[in-house]
Amino acid sequence: MPDAALQTTERQFLTHLVAGADQFDLRAHLFSLPGIPRAGAMRDRVKTRYLDYAVLRELHMDALIVTGAVPNAGSLANEPFWTHMVDLVDWATTNTLSVLWSCLSAHAMVLHLDGIERCRLPRKLSGLYPIETCDDDPLLAGIGQTMFIPHSRYNDLPEEALRAAGYTILSRSDAAGLDMFQKATPSLFIGLQGHPEYDGDTLMREYRRDVLQYLAKEREDFPDLPANYFNPATEQLLTTFAHQARSERTPALAEEFPDLRAMIPHIGIWHPAATKIFRNWINQVAALKAQRRAAA
Image (tube, rainbow, N blue to C red; front, side, top):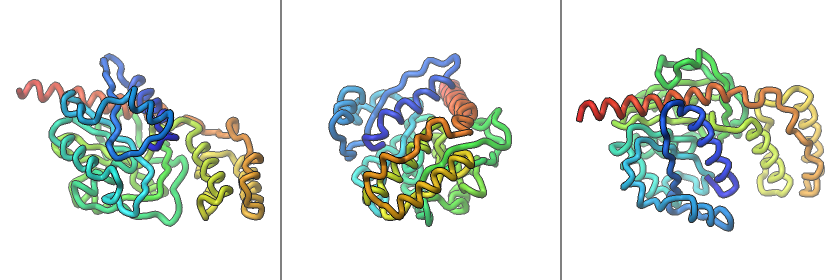
């Protein structure tokens, strides 16, 4: 993750892992791929809290979570971390029991393994979407036929290409498209296009960031409101602000952005499902580890 989201992303994933661990004693290690520039406090944080990437191969990890990143190149293969990402995918294939590939890392994984290119969406997909579970899979046990999951991305993966390459679609939405998918490589690779790890206010903070970038002329288009996220009164308030921002585009207008912290009616409603996903994943990893030990 970029510096601005690094510490928050650590906490989000670790919170759900702890909540889903139940009787298991988990040990988490933090790594950062080489080739990702860091600055200031986050550079110091990586130096002090993260293990050297070269140590990864020595720890006999049962499972990995690989987060997303902000793309800087037109093609993933041109990103400065691409060579190391390819190396990580190849190593994890035979040296882990399972990997959760989140957002951009999921796109990188399928591009390297199966040559499946992601597709640029016309507009950023952002919102809280009802997701239909498509497969009776242990990862989705206890969740039911529908769950709400936040999505925030500019790209999508073609479902039919994934099916043709042997991936199982676990969950999807007509509005948001593909949510979760998996493939045995032989490690169980699970791709997430949504963000079950998000805090209740993450979409709000991302929307505010995008608005401020527009006012500062760091982006050309005014962002769309996150779908199904704010109540109608808040949406009207933000629509009024959007009209003002388009006509008075200046960084000074950022001071008038509404305080939205108490205006999200569905804040965190996806957290119970998210905890179940992480709990089910931990149980899957434990079962796979037991099977491997029995076969040894």
